[in-house]
Amino acid sequence: MGVQRRQWADLPDKVRAAVVEHTGPVTKVKAARGGLNSGIAATVHSLDGAVFVKGLPLGHPQAWTQDREAAIAPHLAEAAPRLLWQIRVGGWNLLGWEHVEGRHADYTPGSPDLPAVADALALLGKAACPGDVPVKTVERWRDYVDAPSDLDRLDGDALLHTDPNSSNVLVGDGGRTLLVDWAWPTRAAAWVDAACWVVWLITADHTPAEAEQHAATVPAWQQGDDDALAVFARVQSRLWAGIAEADPNPWTVGVAQAAARWKEHRT
Image (cartoon, rainbow, N blue to C red; front, top):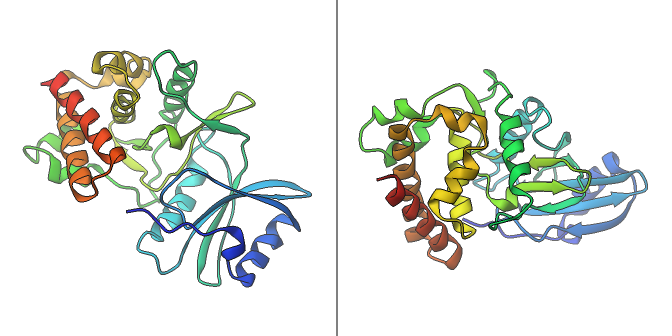
């Protein structure tokens, strides 16, 4: 479910004033073009630099994702931008992130971004999953497995992003490649993030075999055996089929078709 996007000028005066307390007087605001899950998403410029601000109204059903992102941020090492501050004011929950000048990753065949994305997933694989943050677990996939025991093949203690679509990967002008939008951090087997990437690569016109070749450049991929990969391919196919059925549009249907192609490849 998407979120109604507001512009900077639409925020209550009290909210904008609270942001200014952190940034200094605002000189320019540039709204983000992508993303579906933030009520406000914009780069706020001041004389002291720039901050990426994202947030949701406190009463929104997804407002909890703001607190989840804030809680996981200190544990992400160099795999994500730094969280600078969080404020709750005027009915809004806002996060201020380090601004990284760059662009979303290009996943199409032959893209020079693909090795850098693999490196970013490998870097995340070195981050320990914190015990004091309420992350998701493999239970989130229970409705999509053939038997409860299938979840054991997906279980593990790695910290995962689980949504490495191209709009959630920022290729910085300085050479950094970072994972953003941490609403669904999950504790599971280390290879699962690379497996999630497979579906997005197929969506970007790779064959399933080509997508797996790129995923295999992430060291953790080697830890997933054929049976475990087949289980997760079925999970992804069923999950995205349900999403596309509930909200049919070219994007959801395209991802569901890509997930189905991977499941067929793994059958």
